[in-house]
Length: 266
Length: 49
Image 1 (spheres, rainbow over the protein chains, first blue to last red):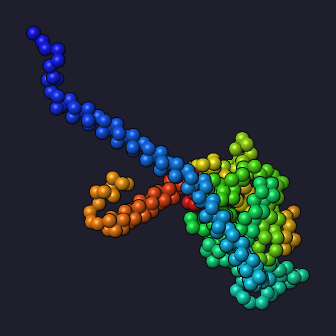
Image 2 (image 1 turned 60 degrees about the vertical axis):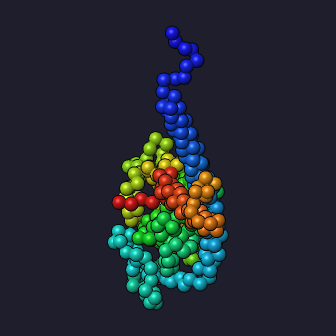
Image 3 (image 1 turned 180 degrees about the vertical axis):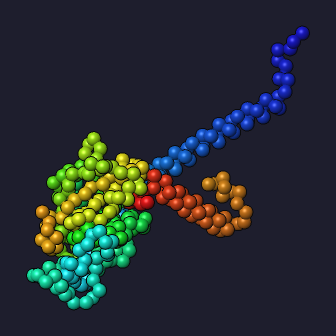
């Protein structure tokens, strides 16, 4: 006859099994909680804290930009000595007096020395997307945390050729967050030591234009940094937002400024 | 954290010192991982070969 109130056949192993299951569930629960905390921290860090860091850096950069404008020596260089955007020349001065070797009327280009990596060198304003930030020299990780950076092996803004500027899209102040809103005809202004250069956004080239009229290239699309005839400003940022899979490129042409007339700006 | 603190060796000041170092190491690791993961969100927009 079976006793109804008899104990289980293996009481110890059953309770040990239950205890193990409870431990696993509890461990899993805590793991998920900490992963959630980690992810929340990540979002807060990227979308909030990095902006604070950049805001602080921008305040310092603004001050150092004023110092640069006051201290830097602007030179005049014969246009023929530097105007060869396809030669790979770096545009600058050797400190010598300008010499007019054109045989014609003086055709001098105003040039400024490059800033050190990570230092402020110019201010960029894009009224349509309410951008007004200080740019730094270089596109290294540390430099871009402070603001948009100038690719060092391209000419400075206001100089002949293709000046390339890169900037964050969603973090570190996100200066180029709304770059996709720019269309042909929009104005970009750059204040440098030699004056204010005004650029106008041009249509995206066919080779990179998508259905929305945006120039989208892979991260390896180095051709966008190639020298161009005339004076151009090329802005690059990540695309789509919250992904660094591709690059959004905006090309703008110099139309006004200290060197615009001499470069035949239209 | 309390669970860990109670299991650390040494007296109270030593435990506090160890906990402080552990927290700093963990935070450094977390922020470092945030930086690496952040590159997937936004690497600065540069083009390179």
